[in-house]
Length: 171
Ligand code: S3P
Image (cartoon, helix red, strand yellow):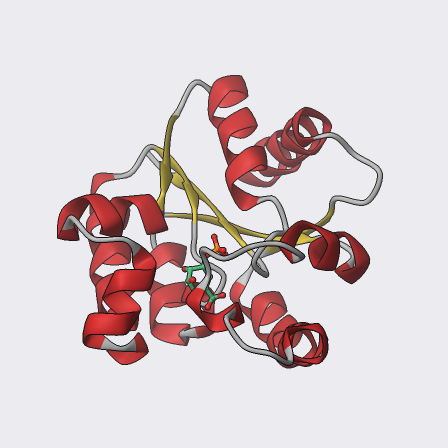
């Protein structure tokens, strides 16, 4: 059974929309950050601190391989995961990749007080997030086969529309 993979910037709603999608489609839900944390028995921040970002990116690739092999998941990926074109290829073999395009203003608001994301633990976060968003945007676009604008929609509304798009594409 195919996967539905959600990608996009930190705070774009991958987990919330993903959970709604998994309920509507009656599929299992998995968040790659939680999957890695459970396997390693460490938080993402601890993994970054102890082993570095490069190692975390390898763990993401391993997670993609495993989840792609199993299938039948709605997968909320980490915001940096689909920047790796090899991971995009792995996921494409067994699923649809949906880029959740959420306005930067909403993303900024959601990430305002966040302390769980190691990449954002820096004094210039307000300038850094828009810069990173600009750099990453074309990569999310090229990784995904579906781009979905979540503006003004609840998670369930987004999930319902995404499911329709996927059903039509798979017919
Ligand atoms: C990251 C996003 C995070 C997490 C890690 C790195 C990124 O996931 O994987 O902190 O590079 O954008 P979320 O997108 O779920 O916040």
